[in-house]
Length: 145
Image (cartoon, rainbow, N blue to C red; front, side, top):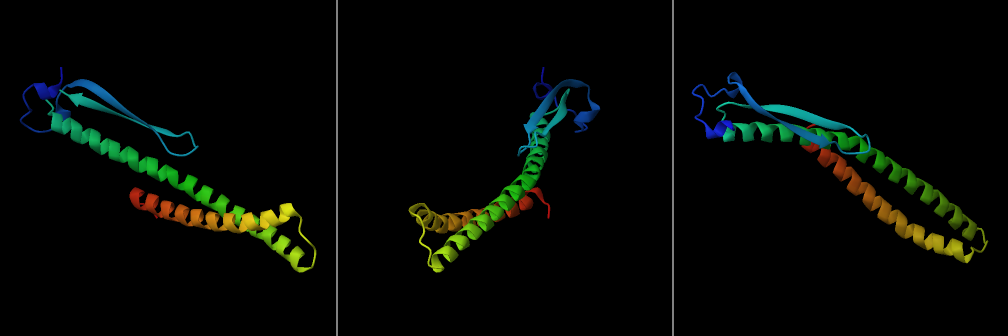
């Protein structure tokens, strides 16, 4: 049934032989875009197992690059949202601090917000840095920008 069980072709080019089967590699690409990718390949009469596995490996590498590449806009969008969140938290924190400096007393809820926001902003800034690193790594893996 499979070519590697038969004798190898002398010319080494399996595409010159009759097709004895096919395979499909499907992948759901990263992110919320809903994009997917599908590659169909053929199994040729007399093709060696090494040849077939080599072709499948190459196609899987192509799909992996596309998956990583499609992830980049999602990572960038998530990072931008985190940056906006930090800006909003800082604005709110500044407002509470100005209220306090003006001599107005803060409610217990506002005091708790001040304490929590300082910690939250630091954590968000760390996540923004990690997001930037993830974007750069994805670009490196995908060979873009």
